[in-house]
Length: 172
Ligand code: S3P
Image (cartoon, rainbow, N blue to C red):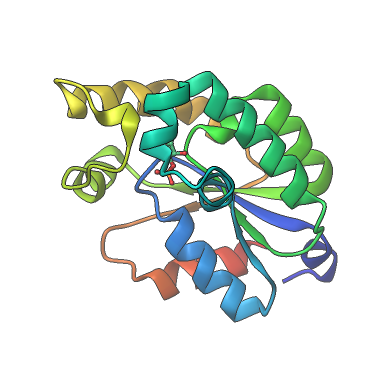
């Protein structure tokens, strides 16, 4: 780990199911820095789940909250910040992240993502008739944007969380 990078918040980006939260926690423990999670902060502040926020207030309300929370959490200047899968799609969020943090894309392929999300009911964007097709469309639209992150790490189904955390540390 190059020393200067720990003076910036490491921001994990990538699709839902890529492991941003699990790897972020492991990474924060390993580097002994705070773990921050934008989805969890939004849920706590609203006292509602992400799915409830989407249902009650809509996606654009959630996106506004997400930008506010990311901006606030980046003030910490140190730590690991796991973001929701859509966060890096916003140009404003990307600007905030590149100004104050270093972005790391957890690059997982579609079959792995699908395996991880298919049994869960927590992601409002996948509550459609054809969740696989929806995930695929999101994946295809988003990959070119995630690819603009400062760094990237390939995720694989046979990598344990700790292995992924180690790979992130190696790239920093
Ligand atoms: C979203 C991903 C979710 C959450 C919300 C929207 C997205 O986070 O922020 O459901 O747009 O991909 P995870 O990536 O942690 O599932």
